[in-house]
Image (cartoon, rainbow, N blue to C red; front, side, top):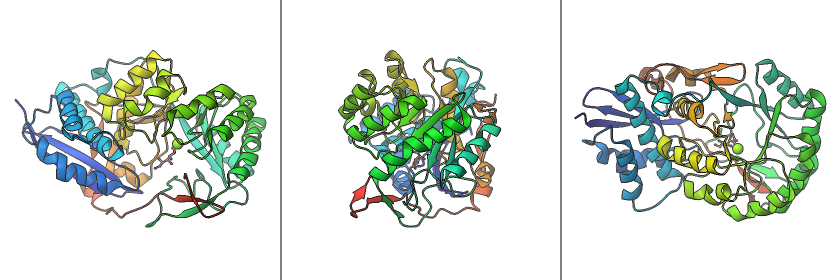
Length: 402
Ligand code: CS2
Ligand code: MG
């Protein structure tokens, strides 16, 4: 029987910080898993290095489900993004190994293709409406059939979702950047901004918008109603999700589709949202929601309630996570859409991936396992440095959701 002989936690920063777990077996087979938690990377690195890696040595790498249960239940303390990101990294690395041992790409181990490729959405943004419209045109020219649109709110320095340069990365400072927020200014601006996109480009493409947790349920219900004439593919994270029942109010007032879940890390955190159909798309990700083993459970529960998948896929989820996500997206019956942010060139030098983008969709390579290899030599060129996500403050100075 093959056993796990090594579990290495690898930190690198090619364009942005990434944490990767590499597991090696006594047969010399290696598998990798993404362990990146944006702004809190070292917490997961330590959880893995100090509390998980020693428990893996000598275990059978083929026993993925048993290892998942052992790490989840064995921790005693339940759930949360740090724990579930660490468990996810082990899970994905073991699935990568299983694919390599079987000589099959993960998609074939997960049930085979239900579709030829997966539709993704791009991220157009601008410091004002004209520059947003230019960026939407740029993403359409790249072949995206689905585009998220975000623009700076007039009068607010540094709004959420506005890319600076080629690659979008909000965790850009060695201490949190404190950004002003004014809900009323946003509520006045957002409908006109997205209406300008529809007036310029029409309705033949999917338009998405991320509210990013910033409204009350009442404000979100009002905005959702205003968005109805714009036929959004989804309005994302309209209100903070700790109180899942608050989505009932939004649901009562608007039919604009809702997408929630990127900050959530277990099936229990989305159980009410899914079983009461309070959302249309579940955004939990392979890296923050316990890996392929747990995310499949979430997606199956969603399928029972006609909720579709819409996995998180920002640049702070590495090419390892993106590949795992696409393997799973290719198979699930209730696929909705996959988020995709183009990585920095140096990122794709460290993570050599077989995942390919063609006219608005992604596909995976036929390589066994994930189809992603980690280049240690290149990774060593990009040392880790702490970076933090911004913090939002209302005009009265109190902290708001960023
Ligand atoms: C955003 C993310 O992509 C999204 O929908 O919510 O970019 C999010 O802000 C980052 O992943 C946070 O690290
Ligand atoms: Mg989001």
